[in-house]
Image (cartoon, rainbow, N blue to C red):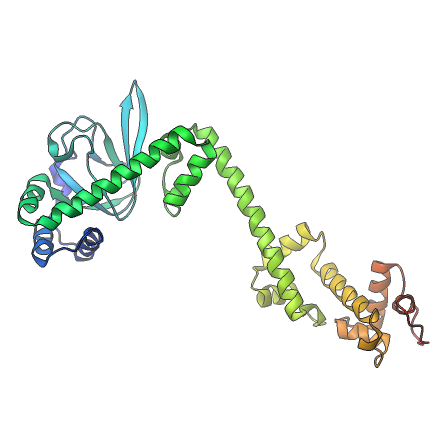
Length: 333
């Protein structure tokens, strides 16, 4: 165990409330038990890489990790193995040497600054005798621990390396970035190089999924709002209106549509015009130029030039091919 100087009697009311809440989630606590815990609990503050206990030492305390991350390791055949990882809001002690009866088989230390609350084994034994509900609480905590150990055992023996990591990711998703990669790999019983490859693969899959989602979001927004019909539309404006960050929108246009923002918007405008011209009843009261202006083109020349560039024919020729051949004075470029 770490030196006794690590333990402090500083009152941490918020932390103690978290401990009481965590214990109460397993079984209701009497006011008497709450008061006893509050009176007897001690504060432990660890700096990054400071030890809570070392392999071979006796552990006389049961801890609640208020914040921080702890990693437990053991040495077997001259090889260090990560045996468990403890995150905020969880309990920790020496599983093999609980209550100090035998030396701990694990070394436990902080991988970032940590705050813990500690109950001495003697205090716990006294509370077992005086408060029946404390027995229930601790029993359920240990049942949870052994269930988790069983699940991890199955994970290690049965699943692929990728499935192991996905299991851990589903279990403590918000904490994984805070755990050193070497400990994560050791805990999952895979090589660090394998874990790096898996994380890259998953990131690529996530990125691909993200772009698919953004593409669908943009398509839906355009269909609903037809922003392209604004003749002064800018990338920043479309980004704001579609709620897609401008840098992501720009990347999406270049990589999904293979277009610049201007070409993308003009293609939407041309498609809008084509749909209109293909349905005579939707534009018979307008000129072809008016249809182009309604689509968002700023001028007749830009409209005709862009339409012919994308279709190979003029708007008038397209209208005639669609079934109508009126005479317009500016149907050719």
